[in-house]
Length: 140
Length: 148
Image (cartoon, rainbow over all chains, first blue to last red; front, top):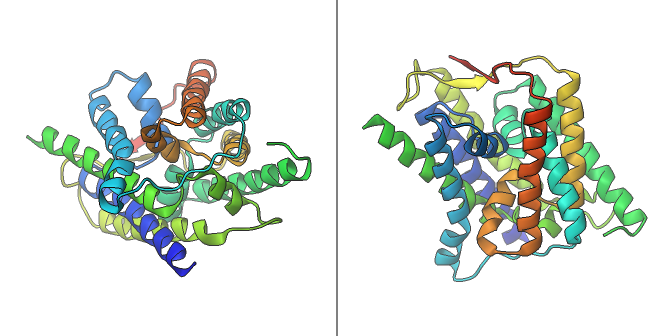
């Protein structure tokens, strides 16, 4: 149990480190939602560096496997139809709300941004409510 | 030369991010939903992910404030908007519903493409469609970032 907490804290620290080096060296915010949208939609000189960030992101679990000899544990409890709905809402909401868990959560809270603090409180509340309602009515 | 260094830095930052996600437990949708299930069998461990990430990210931000410019570029690019508006609140609320349904958000969705699990790949494709839908239909055309 204690090891679980330590792994979560260390993993979180590494996510923060990634955000810190991206800001200090490249002057960019590590918001994955924005990086995905920018990499796909904008044919700008920024595109290559965004694509490379995403390539690194996808390689992360492979590095984990190399280090620990096994994949991290993954359990999906939601049906594919609901995963599609979830994806649409996450994608649309990320763009309308100008950020996701990384952009608002990791980077925005670190900058003490009032917008990000608002966004984090709002998405935690609707996330908690959604899980509650789904469990209450047996929706998976 | 600086251009190459910036690109290599992006790749490295992405790799650290993805490894951190894998280590933290955030790639497991069931665990993320367990973290959001505060009225049920609550799993508080993922709060440590956000806690650890924000502390290190804040140290990085404080260092960046003392710098004239980033090491490998001329300017910092920070979010342009500073006031809370309805788009932010409605967008974040929508995001939270999708996050609660699936247990995935953009970072873990991209990183978990490496596992080749059909339902998380479906999520990621739908997420990109959702982004496109917003940017084609509702984009304001205002710049999203300011230079410092």
